[in-house]
Length: 193
Image (cartoon, rainbow, N blue to C red; front, side, top):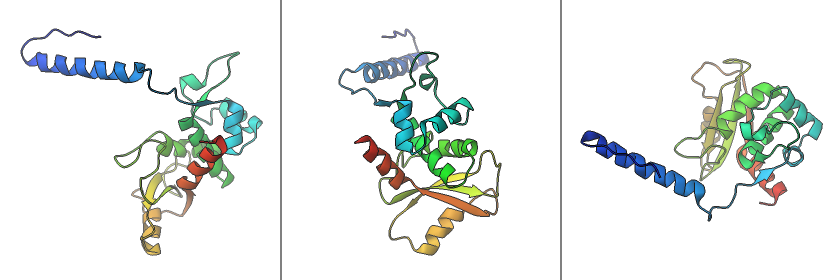
């Protein structure tokens, strides 16, 4: 427990800090929260649909962004979170569609590691389909512009196409679209979740 002593205008700030710290500690230390699942490199390769040697090469070359906990050092096996596994599965899907691995990994981070008020990082929209769109021919080839689009069954085809091709950076020459609902379902099915 952090204790803050303040008077006057700083008292409210100190009180807020104490509440925030207590809440954080309670959530992080709670024995009722199950541990987050982790997966071996072999499991990740299998679920993502790539050969183990291929995934290891991607990691060795720095094509896949890893957190410190996923790079344990010599003699210890890597452990990947479900979050990172989904990222690698999307990279594999984009690479199979013809994208280079490094730009595919950079693009996939916009879904796996960033959210918005309507979906969490690496998550899906609550309704409709969640589509991952990569715009080709604009922006940097090393970090192509992406969008995560929510489409429901009532959208007319013209509206859907307009959503997919809309890009503030300029005219889009082509797009790659991945149905993230399908990707998420396939990953969870292979993991038995």
